Image (cartoon, rainbow, N blue to C red):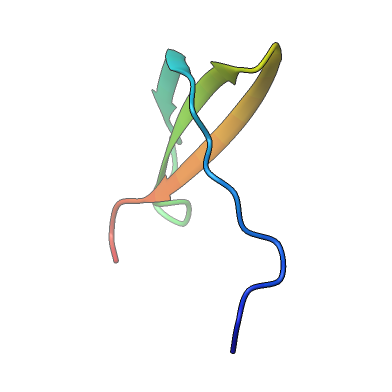
Length: 46
């Protein structure tokens, strides 16, 4: 299946935090790029 909309995020990590629960295995990274802020959630268990 081809992706119709595909892009690359280029920015700088400005903050990070681990979610504090056993049912939320994500590490969150705040990235600032192109004058906007983005939240990147990374699943650390899979």
